[in-house]
Image 1 (cartoon, rainbow, N blue to C red):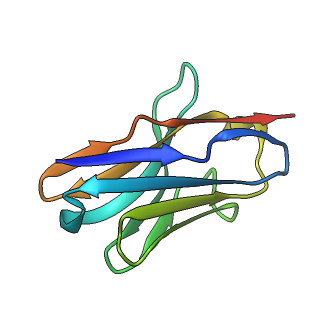
Image 2: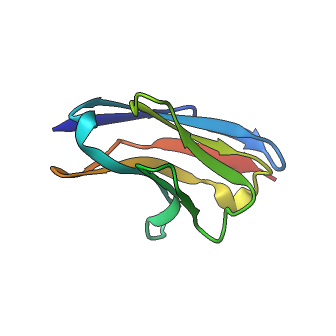
Image 3: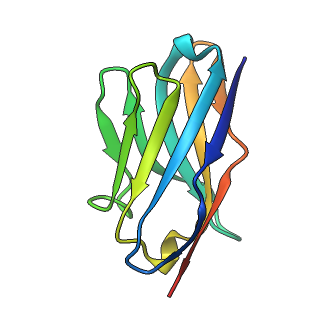
Length: 115
């Protein structure tokens, strides 16, 4: 089992920045990839960014060039730096860990961007 906890959400203005953190505990040694997803009200959950064991990153088209995913060397924390925020970035952001034991999700953190 693994537990994930997101933090860093809140209210930002258009053009502003926020940094989300995901703290993992439990079977983190088995993690093969970490990712951020988001779900706006009434919408389906969508992929935002991901990072795999070798450090390769991938981004959803909506956030390319504005968001950056990173992680610490212990793989216990994953970050999402969000710059040039737009009102359409408003959503609950979720951290996901992929491992040999399956996929694990956090509870989510709300990000609201005002126009």
